[in-house]
Length: 367
DNA sequence: AAGCCGGGGGT
DNA sequence: ACCCCAGGCTT
Image (cartoon, rainbow, N blue to C red):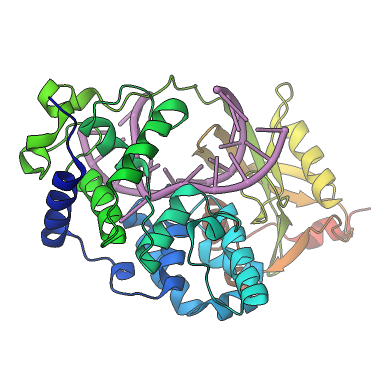
């Protein structure tokens, strides 16, 4: 069987897309800013997860100038809970660069787009084709899976030679007319029909030209490299309250949950128990010596490449020292305006409704 | 090339 | 449990 030709694939895919496309907010606009925003939001993020964030983000930052004028904290606060917070930083930086250096006009070529922070080959291709009608491919995980099956590509299509093959094929397939619709059609097919585990071939417009289906290996493609187990790390965090305030630290600008406000604490050394290690962490991060009382709630959090296992502990300061290293006693009413680690915010909320908190005054009076 | 970066939904 | 998602950056 020959490889399916571009004309057959284009015609079938576009006709199918016109009949079956789902109605998303970013598909009801031609505004490049909104399309750019959607692409940042949806990087490695399911449509259903990102949609409410898209609506809230636009409400808060209706155009690129509003976004550029905002503080990073405001942007992070809207992003809170979505994950991959570097995207928020990069989007904010991109908005500022476009407003400051290009008069607010978003670049129209994939190459110029790719020079902006947080925009790689996929996002550049998506914005260039969807917002500006450029004839460039936009290959996300869905599109790569569809092409791996359609052309029986047995290499890992997420990187290396397999990815290169997909690029060549996609570049040839994307039509000069309606390139954005074609790219979205490929993704849409992967998201709704050519799904990872058990593809619904009976509903596929490419059924009669699909080499993977013909060979009966559609469910075995795409292949992928071996997965690494993610290590479990012990963590402990300190919940301290005084009057109407809680002690928070600003996480480092790079790394996990970068730039978010958080409870003091974090990963514990391999050796050592929380009772001795948590005060060390808190002291180092805030300058404040503390006593550990008891667990408030467990922490069982899975990230992409590690798991956090431990607890949040009620702690009491043993001196009235002023916090250092950027740590702050934050008024509870102020919390709503700060970007906070999501599961810490949940703990803070439940602590507020819990039993009375041991007063900071006790610590303040101690020597 | 490999590691890092979140969180959630489907199976 | 495991997989995977409208990926990109750093080393």
